[in-house]
Image 1 (tube, rainbow, N blue to C red):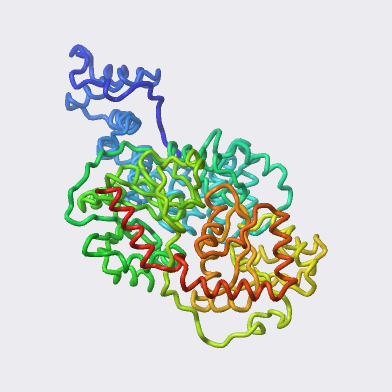
Image 2 (image 1 turned 180 degrees about the vertical axis):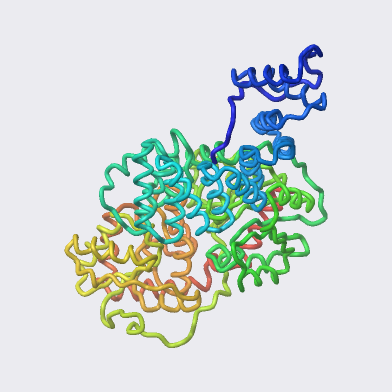
Length: 630
């Protein structure tokens, strides 16, 4: 977000109500000129005194209100700044910069529709306002208007071809629109224009990773040393796929939180409610892995002891949203509310515990938690890592996800569940319609390895091993999830480089959950990715009867499959290095009796393990809540 601002050397508290007496012998213009002089010199306190004196005298000048608004905004007085900008516009309806700054402020406050209107007004007044087009693109993206955001960024670049940030943000929009090649090109151009632009570097890594384009990775790998740690922040989630380093993950989270989300939070004391009030906040009360996992828990919560609130803000509602609405919880649609309005609503509900199911994933509203809406705030399920936030008090994990000694990698205190941290829906249906390997272009007699993880989780490290495995298991195939057309081409190209017939890679299209679960029965062994394991993907596979082989890592996303396998009782499928992972996969594929033993054991354990015991999980979770509140 490009904002007109001035350096701020000291605290707003130093601006006293009893201002320095400014002699009445000064004319109106002399007061203004003196104020502007102090402001341009960085003497903000003196400038503020003159602005305030000018305003208190009842004088009217749009520039004064505009500049005073900048000072108020910089000192965290957002509501007062909003009034000042609006007053500047009232005095001068053609004040493009005032509309621009007001739009930025409204966007920050979460009032996106008014922010869009204000930014468009700035552009209407000044059609060559590149920064306004750029910031309008940010607002439109937040509103989910991706095609309009693309147009806005392109206009910013047309006005200012050297606008590195606009190139980078356009790359992000194009990536979200699945225009990966164009996205990569704009990221590359952004890096050329500004070699220190963190957003462009991280965007280039993730955009190439989405299509499994591993060409010329040496420079990008060097970037990982300090990217998002030194200089501008990035979303740490973007690099979970490419680096298993929990300390770096934490540093990036702290940097992001401080730069983008830190607000003045409000202390909230315990409420002494008759029932414990729990609020879940998510955009994913819809057809989404989070909802697939948590839907049973919402129904099973003991409503005689707990009042459960669901604060929902999905991009689009669907049948899973209806499931959430009918779960016996108090459902509140906050999609149309600004952050401040959502905060006020949640605080009025007097929550004991607020649970963020989003972290820094897409459509998150971390800013709600930055202001604080409950005395206890928890990071859970959606984001597999630390928030780096001073207002998120706890993270829910388990002894595998965050073992003793790993607390240093998390800003939150650790709540360890007695078994796997991941809740599961034990009512998840598997389609019973007859299916065969022929239906999915799979060879009837071959050993079928699978990996239904998103393609961006695949790196050269595990792919090298997979190709070695295929080379040693005659006739075997690897059944992968098809994330996009480009990844299919690149992965087959990489297979050929490793002397493996590209046709031995078979790609699975997206299916409704019930049918997706059913097709797992056609596979023999699932091969996990390393830096970012299968999470819902792993629990889905095991639920459908397909064993998963994993390698445990160091960071949260690299330890989830090990946690799931431990919970279900299949610890022999957890490996601890790449060699062991490769050898175990080959051994299972060469020994049909071993595979039968594993599948038989999985079938038995699925019925008795805590992993799919939704009732037990809910009780254990509620016990943890009671410990926190009581």
